[in-house]
Image 1 (cartoon, rainbow, N blue to C red):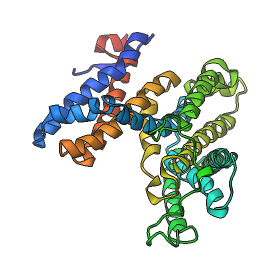
Image 2: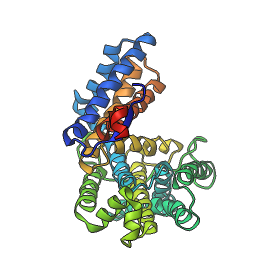
Image 3: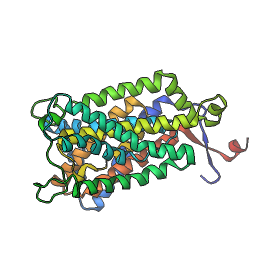
Image 4: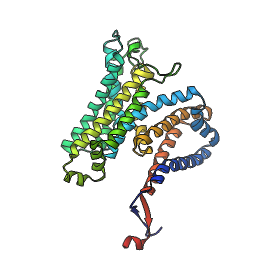
Length: 357
């Protein structure tokens, strides 16, 4: 390969772009197969627990749908910004702020009742996430600060704010000194969809959000502006499109979605605000967005797969003795393999003579 260069293909194959996630999955399985052998684990047992067990019973699949909900919400919001080349790494903090804003209602008004309670919490959570994302948007537009660094550092601030509330003013006095709020009243809980499971209405909201994301990015002029702005920023500036407006829209949409996911988490399966709310959904959603090709339809499938990895990873830790870090390694290697595959879809190796011509 001495002297060979990679040059961009004139037209990328749609078929290969669709096959890239499958190729990445196969490559990740091969890499982790070798890793599990070196660890002294049975790869067959690991992959059975991780990739098949989440789908063989209704109870397991219901938990997959539950995990899929926040991943789908956050990834759809992030993908809009990523396609506009606005890289929001702060979904984890925006998720936490959404959970905090939503929790303020049952914490401050523990006796409140009514059908409007949980919708208000979801709305407040979405607003909280958007407000948290507005800070890096302001610094990027006015001070030209990198939104990557600012959003990443704000995740740490959000975690400290959560810790302060849970060991301070919002701590449950009857909670045996655990850092958590009181349990929320029944009307503050998002209704479940299927009896006997924890799957709730937030899944419907996530699917509706996916449809809206598809319409926005594929059928609206504003979405077209964002995509073109990411591909050719100088051309869009010449055409009169505002880069600052694209930054604001991208970050606010991402923050709104992450905040909504955080609100649905505390008003759904948790039923209270806990320190464990910061469970890494915001970071995992970045993998989901890219694995789905930054396309709303692809993200639906990638979020389902990533949710299955969460549940399957827990199964593998119990039945195959796999450490928790190995599950994270599988997720990370999957992203690396996908990025490598998509590079080969968009670029090709060229001989030195071809490059010189």
